[in-house]
Length: 160
Image 1 (cartoon, rainbow, N blue to C red):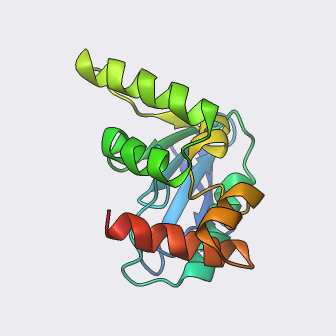
Image 2: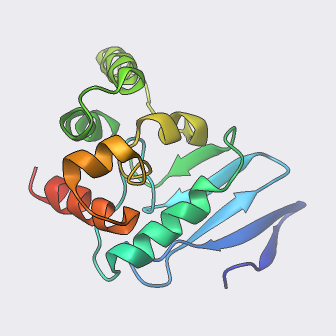
């Protein structure tokens, strides 16, 4: 359950409720290693679809991930980075950090290199789903609350 600590060998992991993609979805944060295994809650430049959850629930889950130290390395369940970059550039075209990251991703994929893991710091600067509380994204995508902006972004990505 959220807030529990589990031992993985000699390492302790904190359980984080990241419901939204599915109900009961969890992530593991290993403070001593500075890593989080986030499943389908966060991808490089993206997030999972809402199969069972609601926008506010998913936004609250992403907010728990956002509260981790920025240097946290995020291990996601899938590498959708190149396709996520296309949507992220559509969603947030004036983001210079995102533009540079998208170029880096294209170069890595051209060399057949991986684009994951990523870092929370990078995702906080470039991932539109983690930036649904940013005034520029709220202005473009609507919503008086971040979860409403998140919902608009997620719906747009579902149909992108």
